[in-house]
Image (cartoon, rainbow, N blue to C red):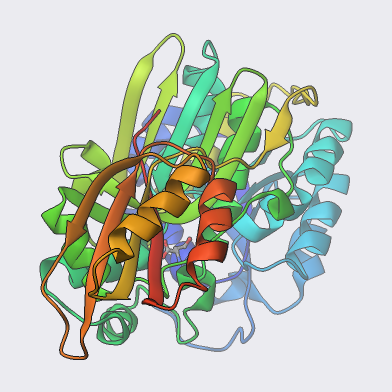
Length: 423
Ligand code: HSE
C-alpha cells in the first residue's frame, strides 16, 4: 500500500493528540484514504526525553531542517505555534514543494496571504483548519461547503478561556480573579492569560474567518478589540436581570459593501443559541444569504479535538491536492461604526434631576433610550443607574460620556458594554 509520510514540527498537546488519533483510528483511516499514514520525523527540543506517544525513538530530531528537507516527507505539520521560527519553517517547506498543515492562528492571521501565494506558486496546499475554534470544522466549511453564500454575519465565541471565566462568574458567582485561577488550574488559561483575556487570541481567529468568508485579507490592526478584564460581577448581575448573558464575541458583519470587525464583551439575549454556550466550549454563528442562519458548536481547544482538525486537513490533502489561488476581493471597505444598542452603568449621587440631566445629554447626542433601571443606594450614598440604549454608533456614546463624566453627581462611569442584537 502506498505510504504518505508526515513530518511534524513540535511535540506538544496537539501533536500528541494527532499521533494518538492516527494510532487508534488507523484502520478507519486506511479504509478512507487507501494509503497508510507514516509519522517519519518529529521535531522536538530533546530527542531523548520519554514521551507519552507510541512512536519509534528514531523519528525524533532536534534539527528542524532534517524534517523540512527530508525528501521522503510529503506533508509538514507545523505545531510549534508563535510567529518565529514557524514562519521560516513553513516558507522553507512550501519552497521544498511540501504540503503544509498548521494550527498556528497568529502566523496565519499575520502572514497568511504571503504563505498562501507561496503555496500556490509551488503548487502545494497550505491548510489551517485547526487555527480557529479547535475541533469545530469551520474554515473548510466556509470556504467549501458554504461557498455558494455571500456572508452577512459571522459571530463567534472563539476563545474558550474567556468563555470559561465568564460562565463561572455568571453561573457560580465567582470573582474574575478566582475564575482566572480556576481556568489556569484546569489548563484552559496560560500562566500569563493576557492573550486570551485581552482579546488577542479571538482577534487572530476572527481575522482568519473573515478573510476566508469575505475573500479579503483582513489586517489584524483593523480589528478593534476589548477583552474581559473590566467585566464585574455587578455587570453580570444586571445582564442576568435584564435577560442577557455576557459573552466575549468576535464578530465580522457585512452590510452593503462594508465589513465591520470587532472583539468585545457583549450582552447576548438569553434566548439566543450563543448565550447557551458555556465554559470552555466554542461556537460560531453565521448567516449566509442562501443558507440562512447556522451555528457550529464544539471544543475549541484540546489535544484530540484540535488533533482531529489537523488530521482532517491531512486527509483532505491526500484525497484532493487540487491547487487553487484564493482570489482577494479588495473592493470591500472596512469600517468601525459599532452601530448597536449599549448597556451603560453609572454610579450617581441619588439627587433629583440627575437622571434627567444624563438623559438630556443622551438626547443631545441622538441616543435614544430603551430602558432605565435604578436600584437601591450603595452604602456610600451613591446609587447604580443602568441604561440600555437603542441602536446608535459608538462615537455618539463616547461623545455623550465625555460630557457626562464632568457632571458632578456622576461619581463613576462603571461600564459600557455592547448589546448584541444580531442585526
Ligand atoms: N487559548 C485558546 C482558547 C485556545 O482559550 O480558546 C487555543 O486557541
